[in-house]
Length: 86
Image (cartoon, rainbow, N blue to C red; front, side):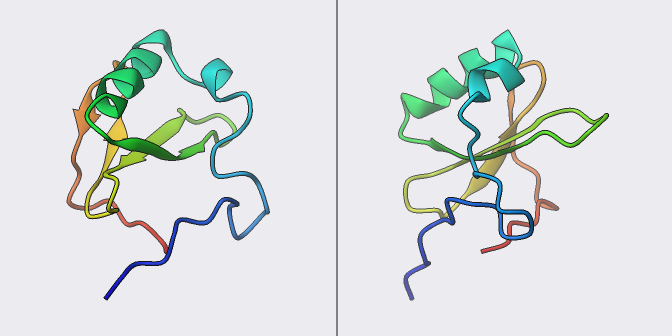
């Protein structure tokens, strides 16, 4: 069974999954971490920047078989508790 492509907009509010000003929202360490995982084929799935909370950066493998977050320090973190809506 093939997974549907990722939505380009957040379903609840209509915000883009990856904002145009994404580099402004990420720490330098997150930007560096993102470039590193992109060199291995991972891609940015979405970025969330809730008020008064840290930015959440989620990346995915090209086939969407795995997701991970990029921490504030730029590290890749696999969280088995991470729930991704499709």
